[in-house]
Image 1 (spheres, rainbow, N blue to C red):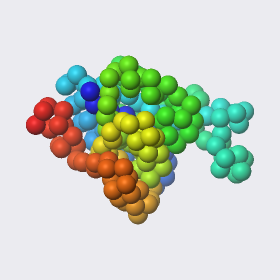
Image 2 (cartoon, helix red, strand yellow):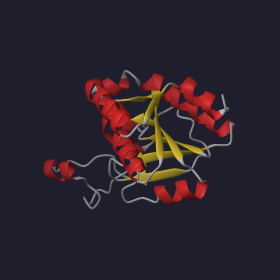
Image 3 (cartoon, helix red, strand yellow):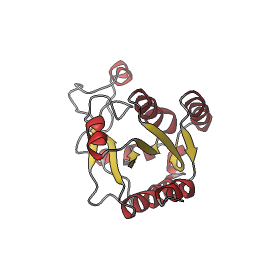
Image 4 (cartoon, rainbow, N blue to C red):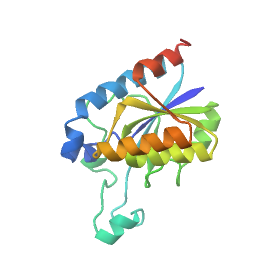
Length: 184
């Protein structure tokens, strides 16, 4: 079983001009993967970030800057418009990796998922950290090249190069991923 994790497709991230310019492309590519996964009986999970206003879930940089981000129940925390999220399970996180402080590993084990496809925002942060932690749990990773974006394309390229080389994690197009789901 292969599971799709669509990470941080939330309004807050698309406030950055670099990501706003890519929003339509990333939403369409994520939706194509979501459709392909559900149509072939594979699982998909929407992973989002949410923090509490009382600073109890803030990261070090948020604490250092005394600046919170993506508060629970805020417009920033909502899924970006157009994302095909209806009926999909959701997971909230407070750290870059979707594995830290969540039940993601249990969910993947319950599904019998031995591989994850990662899509969403941001390639060099949350997607890369989730991919590295998947490796630590012996879960294979494929990065969905067409369905990811980053504020810094150079950092994103560097991270994908490192992860694909050091951890043997594939970087594939949507077409390649969907063909694999169909057994092609």
